[in-house]
Image (cartoon, rainbow, N blue to C red; front, side, top):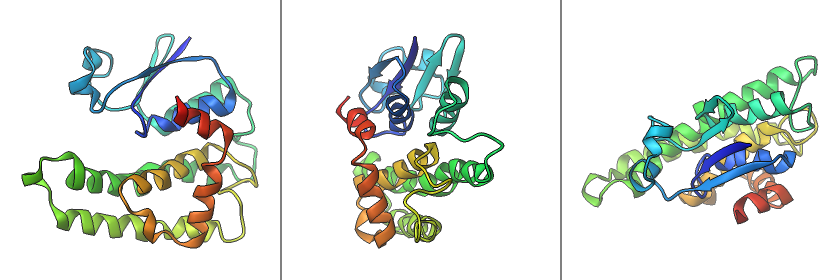
Length: 202
């Protein structure tokens, strides 16, 4: 059985959400954060110490969006995945990679230097600068949602899980107050999905 190591509200929420959308069987191991210090033996499972870790047989994966893509490609076809012959496939891949490289990266710096570091090591200027950087990069999401319910292919896909998680993470670090109307509507709709609610409850 597949196994997912998860910390509440961490990037592991992406594959957990995908597993729930696909109604696949899996074992969920919930850990305190940061698991490299708080969960005994975690560095033996994932030497990086990052979250998530996903195991399927002999396969171990640690990239949240990559795990989502693996699930739809390996256990699909499924409507939340896209195949190479679909017109929106390139756009779909772009959103998957943009979700971390462009959106979640600046959030990580905001989180680290506003909450995770000891008080004496926190850097308000980093928090302000990278918060603005993240919000400026959200313009692409706001624009894409101008006349759409979802990001690509006229349906909900793992691209929405990947980007939606970045928007959700923004809530936890107080950046959502500056979201534009399309992003606010989109996030609110995603958070009403039954699979998202189940994932949060777990």
